[in-house]
Length: 308
Image (cartoon, rainbow, N blue to C red; front, side):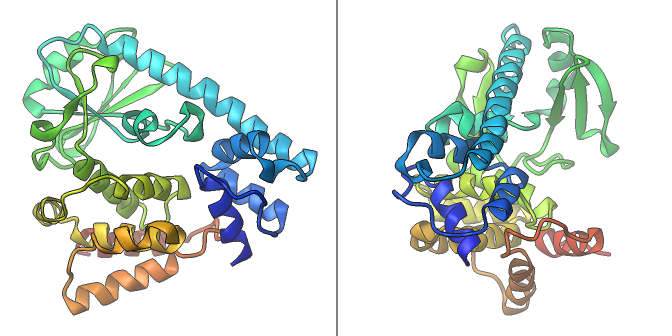
């Protein structure tokens, strides 16, 4: 698939000297939709593969790059200010805000996106009281396992469990490593938990997630992960199907990590695997930018074992 070959080239941290041929209008649309435009812009402006690309293509990417740089810095500085006085509360930073400086060589390679933290339910009141800046409670999710704080400019989403909307953290807090640059009580997930978080988020979208989330998975599987621990945690949290789908698609999108990725696949029963493979097949085309809501919801139910 010519488009996927070009995406792979621009999503590589060490890209080839030439961009594989493809329709550049289609390519830039996919890069923007999938959160890859900032990384692609950096590559075409600083590496040989961008030398012969038209100015209009480069300008569209550069606009995304500049926007993400500004947005990421603003969000991370605001978050650090909100968390720096937080005392006596353990908070685990989730999502791209926890991994962008860990998995990526440059802050602008990946949009930070939504700011999310895991906080134990019993620490919720102390977290709210100690949160700095102008953040105030904005809403609480069903069951009380999630909450949203806002300062009028950005939102900070809080969840109890490893899977948003649940109370089971699966040992997330016990295994998290300190992230003192963001605050004295702030941590980030262990690599296995970071992978499960990525798979869970992708499953909530029926695997129709931005390709940049699969770059996250690509870089996580390069780390020294404990397969048995990963599978045990996935089974406990009901994420084995989600993990299988996430890893399978990552191997398809990025063949250079296929061997490492497929070695981490959890074993599923034949019937389960058939259902998950059908979802995977429907998510293989990165050029498909529109997905029917019912199709996505059906995929979500398969991946998370939901009924109804």
